[in-house]
Each structure stands twice: as structure tokens, then as C-alpha cells.
Image (cartoon, rainbow, N blue to C red; front, side, top):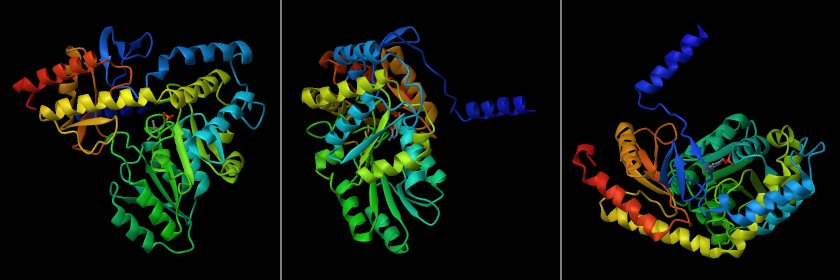
Length: 391
Ligand SMILES: *Cc1c(COP(=O)(O)O)cnc(C)c1O
């Protein structure tokens, strides 16, 4: 019975053109990768600054293994709270202009845990319609009422805030750089609304950390809003090139999470080697702003080239360039064609994006060369000129 249901569900996913398969990357993560045996230009990685194979981080990882060995052995509250965890949290707090920070094992766990710790039944979460799956799941798990406002719609957010009872806890949650659209939330206006209506703001800086701000602190740093945004979360797995996540905020917030947050409490802490990688990565993002500039230059080259060809890139204001296709099947055919030309740009379909908005999510890296950007543009031009593709 159960096996038949599994097979039927898979069949249905295939029928809808939404079937996904894992691709195999051999060797390390760089500007090009070996994908299913083919060397391709990688435009589908969140390793924006090229730190996943940075020599200084590799060296820091080796040193941490020599000094602290491998596993952490337990959760942070038992015997897994090691020197490096505390050192990393100090470094993150400083980067974020916050009193304190707490490391989580992943961004997914951080969002789910944060939301379900901070609000509960009787409280209200105001959440952008394009927020990440982990935020959506956090809302569900919290049991608070979730009012989803249309993407970046401040008027609707304000009217929702106004309608909400004065004495309930109100939490506004938004990504700063949106993961699939690359546009940037109006964080200052959101913070102003929050202040006027007695709400607090939580931001997800997954795609902004390392990329925006003079020190790579993210959009909150770039906009100078550390005082107004009470809760800043982000991941160590994207621009920082490693793995793990963080929440930055007040000392009391950190304390409450240590005491109440189930996805922090009931899980083994990250191994010291992973923490050492993040410490080294934060060092590099502060010291090497040229990586942010190179990323911006490459995005600009790609964006301008693609727009000249007549492609629509939506509202992107960041390194993430969504090439809008609409139809899922067409989107996957375009991705296949690019792959034949040695360029890997992942097609993104529902449920990762709303139905009818399938797209290629194109992201350059700081470590791509000018020639590689031109190679990419030639591949897109080729696809565009093939009228069989109907682009
Ligand atoms: C990737 C991502 C996460 C999850 O972070 P991980 O550390 O990869 O689990 C959370 N929020 C957003 C917006 C993301 O893009």
C-alpha cells in the first residue's frame, strides 16, 4: 500500500514537470565545477565570494583539526560548548553591531527555532509572501497567527499592523536580499512601521551577509539599521563558504534562545573545524572588500549583457539575477541548452517559487573572470537565437 502511494506521488510530480534529481559534483567548489562528469561554468552557487575553497580557510580548518580534533561530542548545553564557538559568536556580534550572537547548526534550524521561541499562540507574525521555506515552517511551528503580506507591500503591512490588537506580541519577519528574486526589502521603512506599531523586526540576511555593508555585515550594516532591527539571522553556508548559521541581537535574546529554543538545545553542536572556517571567513570578508566589488562587477556585466539581449531580470538589486521564463518545462529546456554550452544556471520551479514564475537563478561569483562572464553571455545568446526554444 505505502510503496504504491510513494510511486504514485512520484508519478504525479513527474506529470507536473516538477521532478527533481540530484546532480553530482566531483572535486571542489570553484568558479567552474565538474558536474555529472562535465566541466561547467558555475552560475548556480551561493558561494558568492569564492570562499568555499579559499586557501586561508582551508588552512584554518586543518589547524583546527590538529588542535581540537573532530567531533564536538554533545549539544552546546551539555559538553559541546567549545572555545571556538564562543570566539565565533563574539566575532559575529561585532560584525553585526549587536550585543551578542548565538551559532545555530543551519539557517533552517535557526529560523524554525527562533520563530517558535519568540512567538506563540495569541501572537502575530507579519511575514513577506516570498520568505524562505524555513521562515514559513517556523511560522507554522510557532502556532502564532501568520499574516502574510504581498511581497514588500508596505501599505498592506501597515494596515495589517493597525488591525492587530494592541497587547499581542507582533513580529515582522523578512529576508533582506530575497533568495529567488534578488531584490532588497525596504528594511528602513519596515523598521519605522514596526516602531510606530509596537512590533519587532527580524531579518534573514542569508544572501546579504558577506556581500553587503562596508564590512560584509549585510543589508542592516549597509543601511545603518543595527539599532532598529532587533533580530538578525543569517547563514555561514553561503557567502561565507562554510556551514552553520547565526542569530545576532541582545544578550537577553541569546539567553532566551539558549534556554528555550528547541533547535538549539536538542542538537549536537557544530564541530570545531566548521566553526574555525567561519571565524576565518569573517576575517576575510572584513579584510577583502575587493571580493564584494568583484562580485558586483560580475553581476553588472551579466545583468547588462542579458538585458541587452532582451531577457527580463525582474527587480533584482543584488548578485542574484532571476531570468524570468514563466513556464516550468521551457525553463528546464533553457537550462539544459545552457548546460550543453558548458554553463550551469539552475532552473527554479514551484514550490521554490510561485506557480507560473519559473526562472533561471543566475549568480556569478567574485572569482569568475571577465572571460568567463563573456562565455556565459555567449551561451545565453546562443539559446536566445535558437527560435525552437521560443524565448
Ligand atoms: C539558505 C537559506 C536559509 C537556510 O540556511 P542554511 O544554513 O542553508 O540552512 C534560510 N533563509 C534563507 C533566505 C536562505 O536562502
